[in-house]
Length: 160
Image 1 (cartoon, rainbow, N blue to C red):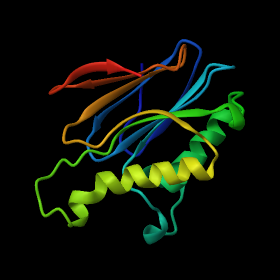
Image 2: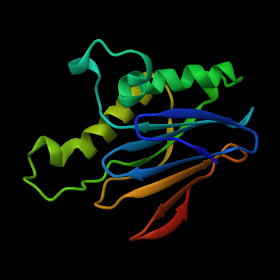
Image 3: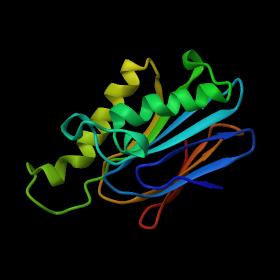
């Protein structure tokens, strides 16, 4: 298992498996090129890097708008072709009980929206998603077959 931490990303090939834990309001983005069995996983913490500019180095992996293009580049280095890449996403939960209009309450939804917009700009379709709600998730992604498995202490396990 290749561990992907918060605000991090990694690429896996062939029989390798990627895992990210503690997906609350963060969004885990799985990208896959099935022709060459190259998988990528990004743990997005925040939607937009612009308020924090300049962003560089590993900070790029924190934001949807900078992490996802970086992940695609890393996948291309391993033989993936951008036009074949598909996505599966999970997370973006509302983990805090607070005023519905507060920025803290909406960070999960803002992360989901930013991920979807960035994937649209990259012309990467989303094949499956398990987003929102009010519980955390662990996301496991297999480079062998592109299956995304979700585990939740509260809800159990399922696959996409």
